[in-house]
Amino acid sequence: IFLIDHAYTYRINTIRNELEQLSELVERLSRLMFISSDEENKINAIIEHMWKFNHTYTLAVDGGDAEDREPY
Image (cartoon, rainbow, N blue to C red; front, top):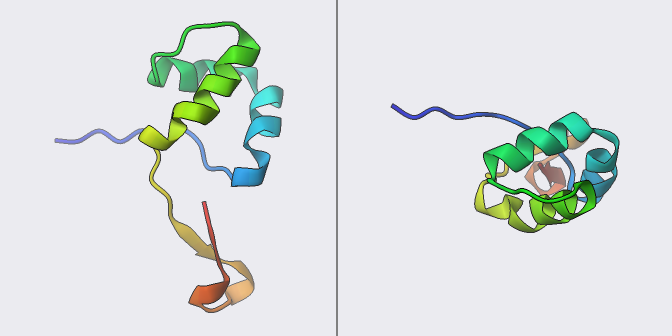
């Protein structure tokens, strides 16, 4: 049995801004990733280490073709 926790959907260009505004999300992600440090360092560590935990998917933007899909 696998338990999958969908914690956060984001766009690459908005990660830092969103984390800076959502301290509860920073705390949740840092617990999931076993990161302990002050708030700014947590954000940096989350951004640096999130790729170990993430899987991406694509969404069609405006019903576009496969070439127009954006990764999330």
